[in-house]
Amino acid sequence: MPKTWFITGASRGFGREWTIAALERGDAVAGTARDPKSLDDLVARFGDELLPIRLDVTDRDAVFAAVHQAHDHFGGLDVVVNNAGYGQFGMIEEISEAEARAQFDTNVFGALFVTQAALPYLRTQGSGHIVQVSSIGGISAFPNIGIYNASKWALEAFSQSLAAEVADFGIRVTIVEPGAYSTDWGGASAKHATPDPAYDAFREKAAEARRARSSDPGDPVATRAAILTVVDAEDPPLRIFFGRAPLPIATKDYESRLATWREWLDVSVAAHGPAA
Image (cartoon, rainbow, N blue to C red; front, side, top):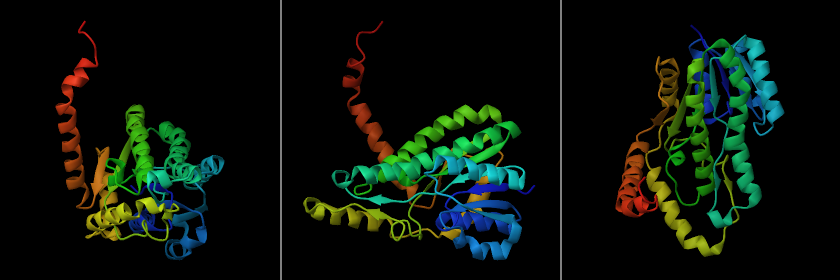
């Protein structure tokens, strides 16, 4: 059966690719963008199956109105994709309050608002799938994008809690964790803090490490089939990596965490106090 999608950030990156994937197979999509004219070429190609909606996901009232519009227009919602977001570069000391709040407003609160707006409709119909676009940076962390990492860790945390809360209503949650892809995430859509010269030498080291992690970027078009497989699955995963790079990074990171926790276990147990 055809599905109805609500996709934020549908004008570029994964949002655009997944909008095309859904439309090409006969699904309907409500696609949001700050400038809906950026979807004109897809409207010309797919017609009424695509509903472009102007939306700034940081505006809670606008988010609820957009989800309501999409639901009423198509008569239901099956897949809700929180894709809108951007990368904020800068060492932690360099990040201003305004930059930190703006990063969380989009990457965390934007996804939260869309999720909250969609849930009453999904609960009523007893089905639905919420897809949260995170990152390998949502389970690991890297220099010079710490506040971005923090926003994705927050997204991961509330989404894991959400999955437990809504499972009995027939609603599924999947957190997609991509590695490096050939999108403009680190280019035109990224924001950069004012650099502090004290970090210039380390900044270059961090840049070299990032170039190494991104030396074989994935093809965004290849994610079209992957996302359809996920949303069509009878038992979709809570988390899934997209790309070859994330698993080795996660494996190294988690093995290191476990080793440290075990090394310091005596101190941890002593901190509990006497046994009952």
